[in-house]
Length: 325
Image 1: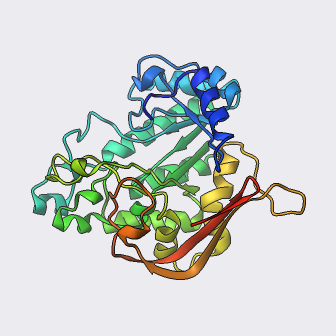
Image 2: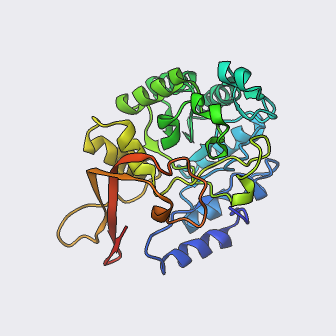
């Protein structure tokens, strides 16, 4: 976010402000002051004010010593550290996944080890501290294997994947569509298949939209100069439902709601008389073609325009109101 949320007062402001909104916001606090990766932020104070976890977002902590201190610090209050696994010193000039397609297109690549080396490091630090770690936005088959092994060893680790890493491979970049330029980059078909299998077997706990709106000027340019990211909130359910036509509805609900509530210690919504309703209504069998008229965002950086998607969110019931999609 801009500005970075790294103080108690900022968290309190977000929590209070969200009480007036149709939805409830659960803020993340920064791991380091101003997300600069130099000095730990006041995490306990933010936790007491309502922060559910701590992350430096797209600026993951590169220092192993500092990340170790963060894991040790949050353990005192059973907090969770969230990390986006990117070694910024590897493939820093890359524009897409390093491989056959990047060679064919003449674009510098980002190797999978830029992700995997951070995951391996952080798992070692987690094992040392016995703290809690959530890795967001994994994209490679080896990342899946590393996390699967860590879970088998009993470590308190969880992870998420974006809808588009379950839907697209790097082969779709043949036309240099800047809306498909993401961080981490789209990977190979083999990676996509490994991620899909990890969703089905429970290695991947939840879906993270990694919703990154960009203005038109930041996408309507050469691929080299385009910014990373796509909008993802409004298409997340439909994209995952389309990628997994046979997945159970219970698993979908776990991926989008229940598991995240468990990981971050949130109260689970219960459909029961007398309980406050906090429900998303959806139709898995509805089909639609995404058009610009369907777009609810101020930004249009989505590769799903004019694509047929299966499954549609009808609306939400929250805070005693129904909001139709």
